[in-house]
Length: 433
Image (cartoon, rainbow, N blue to C red):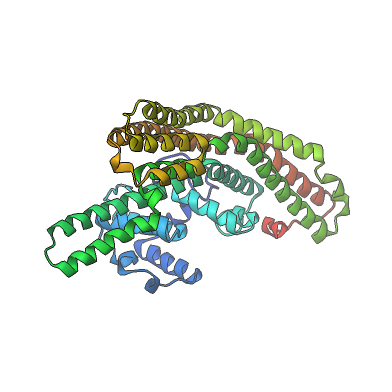
């Protein structure tokens, strides 16, 4: 069938569109049933409409872009309730089918991926590959769900959550500055002394929420760079491959254990995977990952080089500053701090922050930092797009070359041996308990 949201041709057994994340179980729902689904979800999660402001009640949504932005931001980054965010997106899709909304606060990651990854971290992995209610309960569907879960969690652990934290902080920081500048404008216009003092207090409160160091532009850059933590991606490629190959083996062993226990089928003991077989699967997964992420890792080196360029540029500026010891001290501490790592940088900015405005070259330094960071951000966006594309390719290859090729055959071998011994098979979910 074809996904009604993005048009991708998807196997009929899939519960979600692998391209855009559309939930096929909601295809036949009307606007009323969409609202009912929202009510059911909030009840199950122990939430109620009263927990959220009127702005966040779906039925109070007026269809405007402004309210869409507020709802999306609050659910995605403040509440971090990805199930409710998914319900909200579906509600909007049904309620306003002819309206196209700009995702101004999107971190570039589909909500279904955020939901699945967070759910996997909070629950047993087997619950994330359910073959009970949403599909036909076949081994193939189980394998498809597993390929989707493995590739999604791999992407999110490798890069997705880093990007999420990066954008979450960026949006929060930008919104805070907008609020600060608006208050500054109100402060300058206000004539009433008491009201003026009140506005001043509000202004002083905002930077304290971030800390004096992070509120400074230079500090915010380092905060974002540290949240991405891109230098750790390459070492994690192989580590995560081993982690998720173990998840695949564990799933197979659960099914085998239950088959032996339920049917007293001791003749299945010889089907347990050997250490060598587990290593083979891990190597296959690692090869698939390396193959799909090879281009992205090359782009990763470009981004990391941009980070080094920022450090080098600051050092260059510090050497060419005027004789002003104050200004030179600011630049040098910033530059050496960047090179010596996050702690050194934080100390450097903290030391030089008070003297920032005193330096005759401070504005030049900030301008250079802005230009370098803009260039860095362009490369990060490109890396983000490439990593998302790699995730899609990994999902397809995991299905074709791992779950279909090894898991489906192995599980079917268990069931064939049971049938050969006159056993009547139970629904697949019984073997997953």
